[in-house]
Length: 392
Image 1 (cartoon, one colour):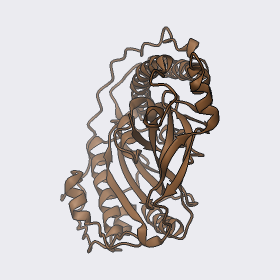
Image 2: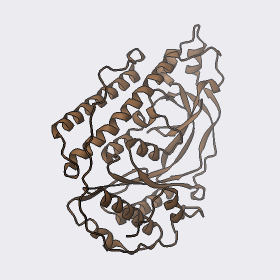
Image 3: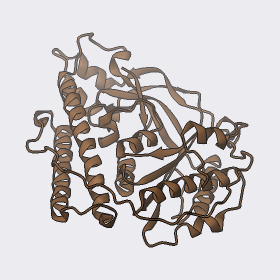
Image 4: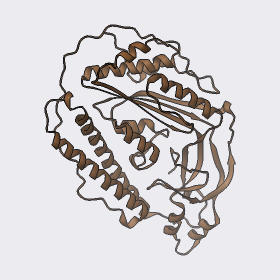
C-alpha cells in the first residue's frame, strides 16, 4: 500500500525504501518529474500548538505525515527521536509543543518504471526477490514535499502540581500574546519563575533553516520568524515523502512476493510498541527522581534500579531492531525485556499563597502564512487544544 512518512535524510524521487527498517536503498525507479514549482507563492503552512502529556503524544504531534506507525515513530527519523529523548516528556510535567511546517508544492515521479537492473533481477527464474530487496527495499519514493519544520517545546516542572498547571497556562498565553502581536505581560511572566522549585526548559529543533539556542518565549518566537524567512527564501529540504510499493509498477512477473519483509514488519511493530511503553515508564521514573521533594516518601534506590532496568531494556529492544534491519534471519524478539513493576508515590500538596490577579490580553491574530493569506486565530487554537485561560 502507498503511505506518506516524514522524509528520511537523503530522500530523492525514485530512491528505494525499506518499509520494515526505514532506510533508503539504491535508486529503483525512474520517470518524468512533474509539479515542481519553487515560487514562494506556492508555499503553505501547517501549524500545531497544544499540550502533550506523554512521549507518544509528542511523537505523534511532531509527525508531519498523518497515520505514522508506531515502528516509524520509534525507529524511523533519527533527528526527531533524538529530540524527543532530550525533551523527556512525561505525564508528571507540563509540556507545550509549538510546531510550524512550511511546505512547497509536491514534486512527483510520473510514468515511473523500474530501472533495468531491478527488472532483470525479477525476470530471472525463479525471481531473485531477496537480492532485489537488498538493493531496492519494498517501496520507492514517488512524491516529495520540500520545505522546513520548526519544533519548540517548553517543559515546565514545579514541586506544586497546581503551580505547574498555572505556569503551563501562563506559557500558553504568553505564546498566544506574541502570536497575536501583544507585547505586555513579559515582566509578570518572568516573575512567575522566581522560585527555585519552578523550572522551565526550552527545546527547539528545525529541519531546514538554522535556528539558534533559545532561553525564553520571546527568543523562541523570534527564531520562528527568522526560520520562516529562511525557508521562504529557499533554505528548503524534503520533509514528507510518499512511498509506493513496487507492485504499482509494471513487473516481469505477478508472483513477486516479499514474505520475509512481512515477518520483519510484524516484529518491528511489536518492538515499537514495547519500546514506547518503556520510554513512557522511564520518563515517569526520571521525573520522580529529579523532583523527589514533590512526592511522598519513597525508596529512591528502588526507583534508580528501575530506571537502569528500563535503559537496559531499551538498549536490548533497539539492538534487536537493528539486527532485524541488517539480517532477516535475526528478526527475533529479545528475552527478559519486561518493564519493571513500580508503585509510584503520591505528590505532596504544599501550602501555596494565592497569586495576584492579572490580565493577559490576546491581541488580534497576525500570524500569517508566508506567500499566502491564511491567518491563524489563536483564540480558536486555545479552544481547540483546551488551553483555557485561568483567572484567579
